[in-house]
Length: 483
Ligand SMILES: Cc1cc2nc3c(=O)[nH]c(=O)nc-3n(C[C@H](O)[C@H](O)[C@H](O)COP(=O)(O)OP(=O)(O)OC[C@H]3O[C@@H](n4cnc5c(N)ncnc54)[C@H](O)[C@@H]3O)c2cc1C
Ligand code: SF4
View 1: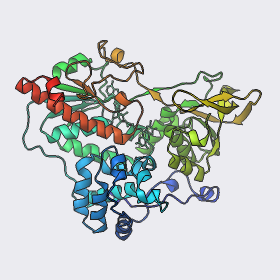
View 2: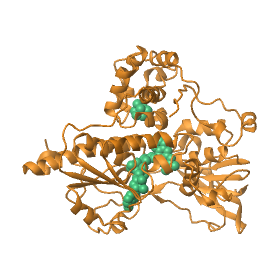
View 3: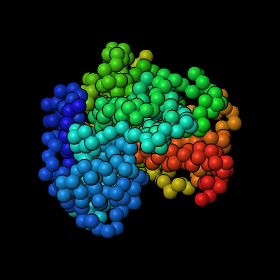
View 4: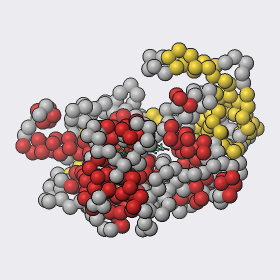
């Protein structure tokens, strides 16, 4: 495993010169220049130890950031690592891919005072990568083995965080996943340039070493019903994420080279993992030399445009119906995309995909933002007679994700879901309406963030432990939850 290098500032990629000089893919890695401990200590010592740790409050895991910054500044890295890993199962992953501008760093008082945030995410990554390099990262070792077993459906960050926490307590844990690799969207969604896959696979191996059993290529609904798994385990956790891509029903949607974001991104990730991907190798899902138009304004859209840049697209445009200020994605991601040469076509709603057999353009119409709706967001209104066409050889739809129909998929019509299709849970016990069936991550929140999935997985592990212990002593779960 090569030493992961630390980088404190964003890439200095100015288009078009650097892009022209870059070869495909490799030259655009988001990451890592020479790792320099003095720089890390210097950066960590910028923390003013302000006493009102807004960074910690705004980290979903409430990481003890001020203390591990202080330890890093003092060169006490092993202690810094111990502290960082005590609240986070995947600190080097969150350090890489949390939208820190919306979480810890965005709330740093130094940032608020206009002096630029302490680069908390980079330091979290640095501390943990140092720990890996120096052999401080060890598989969890339960103090005693318990007979009770827990089945976890979904090997994404929510399922894996729960698996590790439950294993720590001695439970026998089996994780079921329909993919061929564990990691969920860490492997097949988030692009390589933001999160290298060996970093995820290293964690998967550590969790297996701790004694968690993976059953991969195992789809609940196809290979077992939910009820069958309930019979097999003392408790179940559903952490299946959200995978039903939102679609736009536009004329021409059936043309060639119009793709869903996950098809495009997972082909690129599989390629990065060394898999044979015929649809990429024959050029279909490769953006090289193409005029790419991505529709959408969230983080998935940003991942698509930035992947297309790295694949050597001729041009990359992002069509979004609101303006920059109203984009749901991280502003940092948008700035990175702009630096890399992506052109944003704000206030534009697609009307049709144009072309004969394959797409040759996207017709869009100008949008005006009207009065705010009940959610406070301004409603997009189409400007009459303002249609225009953007040329495209490849169009990617990145409009977000909804849950699949889990009661149907799992063969369990009694499983309670919300009107959005997410699993309904009791927010104290994190249990669904089915006794002993818990849920965590995106399948409860809707599409969210890795750090929230980790938080949910850890909380679910606590509640599953309480549930199983309460059952063993004959208590009711409700009385446990009310403690
Ligand atoms: C393209 C993209 C980029 C993103 N980038 C970021 C980012 O930069 N930073 C960030 O914080 N968040 C990002 N996110 C969001 C983040 O990846 C998710 O919020 C997070 O992965 C949710 O974790 P999860 O464990 O709930 O679900 P997932 O990671 O989706 O994992 C769910 C797992 O369940 C499995 N599964 C589903 N159904 C079944 C079944 N029936 N049987 C067996 N297994 C099943 C799936 O195969 C999958 O492995 C991104 C999301 C996408 C789509
Ligand atoms: S987990 Fe995310 S939000 Fe929390 S400190 Fe790390 S980078 Fe910041």
